[in-house]
Image: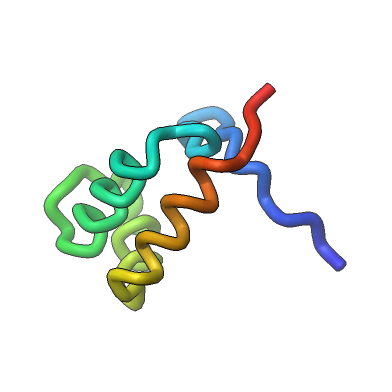
Length: 68
C-alpha cells in the first residue's frame, strides 16, 4: 500500500502540513473559484470537484499533520 503524502512541500510546492485550517480551506475555495494564482492549473483542476464538506475535511487533515 502506498504511503500517504506528508504534505511537507518541496521545491516550488509549499508546505500544507500544519497550516491553519481556515487558511487551507480559504485557499481551496479560491482554487475552486479560480480566483488565486495557480502556475500550472493543477490546484484549480483538483479543487473543482470538491464539495464544501470536502474542503473542510482536507483542511483539517492537512492542518493536523505534523511538521518536522
